Image 1 (cartoon, rainbow, N blue to C red):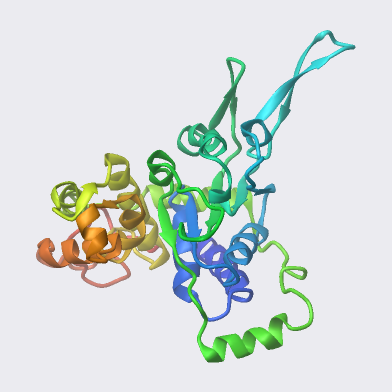
Image 2: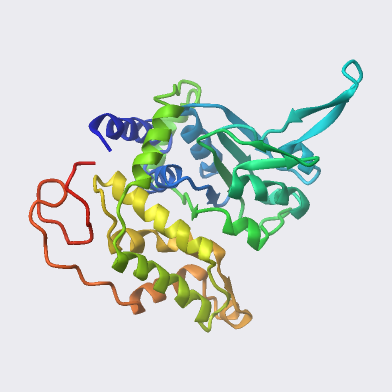
Length: 337
């Protein structure tokens, strides 16, 4: 990334952090998913700022934004759209649904029925919608930012495995520290900071950032490391469902985006390690015995990270990356991101 694109990232980061107090790691992961062309699932208890994070990210970019409040009576056609008979033209006219936006906020996604949730499957994976035999392309960039309450909450439906697998990463906002909560009272006590939030980046700038991330190099040892981590979830005795090949692809894309955000043109095993829990854990299903033992999917991923050997770096190559010798994972001429 050039300096101008780097400044775009910093503007978006500062804009979102001005609304979400004391959670820089959550904002960083949100930006990583955006630049990796993924979708973000925000899961936590009510009142910790899930929807505010989604809105802040969406409003910081000058692009089309639609919000869907998922309820038990929401229909699939409310999301995808519907064909309506036009009496004057004597033909069907397609009325696009809420999914036809560049940033789609799905609030409390697990309060809708699985039938309605499945309306998102095609759009999230193929970035298109098929209605009555016709296929409609979705705009670019396209990102779904969904919030959900924990499954234990009243009135929720568990997300189907196919739906969870389409989210690149899951993040938990968590409770703020005492200092951040005190600052939140000062900032949010009068009016919501979302009301004064103005776009700080254009959609075409985000597209350029995404293209820059695609060009980040991933050496063969790093790719193999990602494959080994995902493969280990499929044979772990505490899991009855491991991660899919789509998870491997998402992990690699997220690592490339994280490398770019850190000013590198090459991904490191550290990038894969840092994102493994966020990218993999929500796709895994623990066995009944593991659940009885209170073993979580996050704990299993951490255990796999500890057991899987990290690839050793190759001899340093003089002048690689940012003007210094790099770890040897890159195979391209040096240039500054």
